[in-house]
Image (cartoon, rainbow, N blue to C red; front, side, top):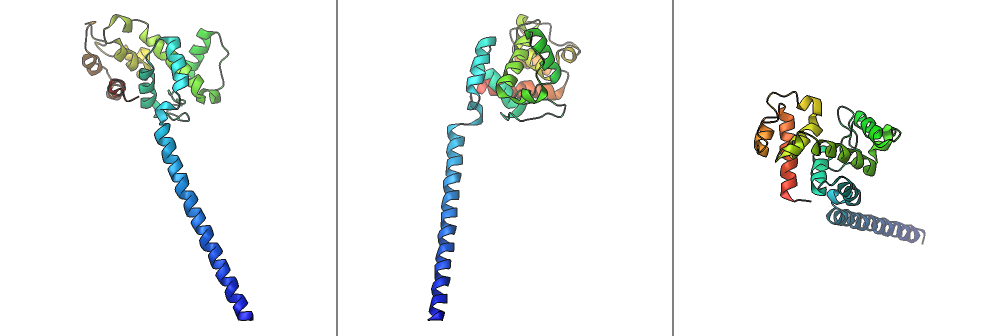
Length: 201
């Protein structure tokens, strides 16, 4: 009788273990399926559509260009940090934050707040707009390539490159990119424009 009770207890415990194990496996499968569903339904480039649409309208910039720039800068990771302390989605530097705050008449926000997607996209798009809507970008047929080079390298550094931008205001994007004085910036501008033209967003 005693041995039968022990065997029954062992069998019961074995069944409980198997049941628990199967529940865990089932839950894991459901979780993986849910993760895949979320990835397909909400790809990274759609996560910030609302914020991007607002600033795109505010600064009259194609939202697809903003997305292409964000893709290049951070692959849509709002917590991204650059080697030179660039912050967030659009890899903003604090010196740009200070300029933005001064122009807008705001207090300079703390560094930690720049990781906020809405604020980061606002400041980054503002900076891009400054380049796009000023000389020499507005005078060139393909001024967008010039603006992107400035965004990456900085305005002062960009205009220190010899014979850049080309004198011809009708210069092609390729001619503008090929004249950029830093290889990494050439690749940066080329990559964004290819993504922008691909209409993958």
